[in-house]
Length: 456
Image (cartoon, rainbow, N blue to C red):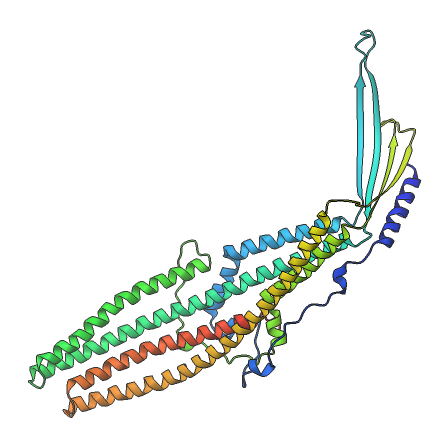
């Protein structure tokens, strides 16, 4: 095959690459969110945030659950497949940088029907062809950059799915521990109520108290028995919910042995908004959408400009014994002259989409700031509530102890003791609920502040 074909094509393609333009997105800088002052997000005496923030809770059980969830979650698997699809689309866009090459070999057999004495006449052909459109106005480069942005957007979608799943698993794990703790407290309260009922029965038999006191305490015991049934049902529901989240086909879980009180309560990280809020996947995706809209405007405008294509062909008249090689070269220049305003409408549509992307970006940033500040306020409130619940529980435990002493000594009637007992039981339940709310507020803040990079 003549070497001139290769030399000619290399010269043409090299010329096309020289004349090609750079993508308009190369000159853009990422938009930085306009955030409030740093002090709005800073809390003193706080540990630094971590990519694997949930490990600060100190629960190997939770680590194992999250590992299973990440491998079996349908949401994560779908997001991963979409990321792989975006990667394939990116490879397809990059393939357009290269010329198209094709090969064709053919054979034909012909018989003249007017002369039946003659046989078939045979012929064959062999040809190579190549085509390339010079990227004069960076349309192809913009397409590649848009595909890269789409790939990054899908990567962020995957990360969002992982973050959401992490938050759901951690919250459900805490809900399960809270249900187990409430059930243990309910059994403990029932034992205490039954013991007091036994004591009142002894006093009744001794003539110290009336049957009304026995009936009152019996009501407390029956109420606790009824509450136990509801708590056991709720615990079974919580277990199935967590099993479904981690992808258990049997909807079963291993035994969870830790208690809420054994989980660590890490301090909130000292937060720098520009480095954390700006890392939120939704803000980064809104920024990507803004870049892509700018590329769409460029591509719509470039439709007005001429396009230059190169072609080359090499053919021979015989496949088995190639002879009569022929080389053909071609160039074509196309320029739209009149389209009834179609291109202008496309440009207007792209510009409108770009303005919408700018509005959506600002709205996303505002919502992120609001969520972060609300989460900080909620966590601060829950910290105070937790501290107060500890004091309330200790005070009610002391009150119950004093009421028991006074009742035994005859200084007070049974109604005071019964009231102190019920208040103490309520304080124990409230302590579990408050600790769960504090942990949930901590989780919400970690998820709201942004995607901390690995090693961050």
